[in-house]
Image (cartoon, rainbow, N blue to C red; front, top):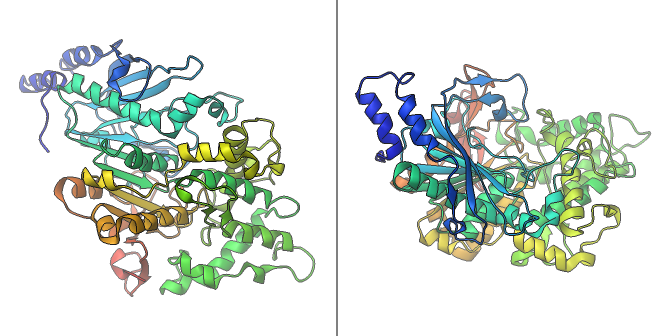
Length: 558
């Protein structure tokens, strides 16, 4: 990939050839070149979607910074503040059409030496927070330079609304334009604005465009492939909340299963987790705390064996608790047909039930059971699935913040459920336009995920194969499954260099095969603790003998 010499970059090159040090005189002309973008107004027509005008609020050179690691953080990766080069930070907003709708905020980061590529970062949860696109991409090795340091232009958005203290994160959905922006429009609009900023900063647009996202951001990546197939060359979608409407209704159902005596205290969560490991851990040839074959584990583990024969205690489950676990693992049959003909959301588990909560983002205690039983109004301490699912029912589907979700029935809101499903669910298996333009798509599911069901992503992959044929699908799409890993990358080896795999496929025609999953220390320096193969679905890693910490000691088999 050649370097692109631009007005912004030429000032840097001139300073370098003059022998000046980076910390001295080059910052003066570079600052002027960068800040010439500040205050710039762009017409609404810069994006192909109906929009208001675009305003760049600020553009300023940021100094280089060193890597640091915090003692705590919401995810393992979030504890790292990676090393960054000096770059031009562009902040701005896209005005809405509806004056009552919020702005779409964005951040675009322009490296001094550009490799001709760009990468858009997806969001998370219900968004509402500006994604600065300076962090690691999903699942990236902790010691890998972030895309900006590799020469990529990076950018992100808040998806068109801003969270407010004291308000549920779903409140924005009461506004139609804000909801459409969250569903898909904001990512497309910001992509188009970013391309225009690159043209103005570097003298031409990007040669290759990539999108990376996890969870909600993973859904956004699939949405781009389905709705805007001409916009990206490569997409990495990790643990996507793809079957969005089904997930929110499942979150409601699974939370209600914890009521009336069904709630599991931490001791009961640990009991179930240990029983799953006892039944399934060694099935791959090695007892290492990782269930490599969770699909097979569904046949081996029977929660009914844990039911109390006498009085309730920490060493057994009551009938209500057994029923709650069975509910979590069962598919949810919708009584309204959703987008693309879907009516069922797959169940969760087994494996990963007792993964320690990583700052409240791991295993059942973070996503399902919470620290306290489900309450009304929903609280984050009740478990994120209940807080998210019940809130989505109130604001997205019922459009009534005081709706009693315990009496909610989807069929009573059928028209609205279908409307939101058409907006939010990224389940269209027809990727023919994305394939025809040469796009490449990599999905990754973490098999101990309780924020969403990994089997939803697996089901989507299978639907693409059925729609487009196995050979065609294999030519542009991959699905990898990471056993024992939870939604945010804890519990088992979880890190993989997916950006290199994606760019090699897009730019060199080198299709990815089995990759390497790394278990790394959350520290500086970063240390490799163990590795496993990352297998393509439906293969799983099975121990063949040798050093248990080496990926070469495993093979991807049925």
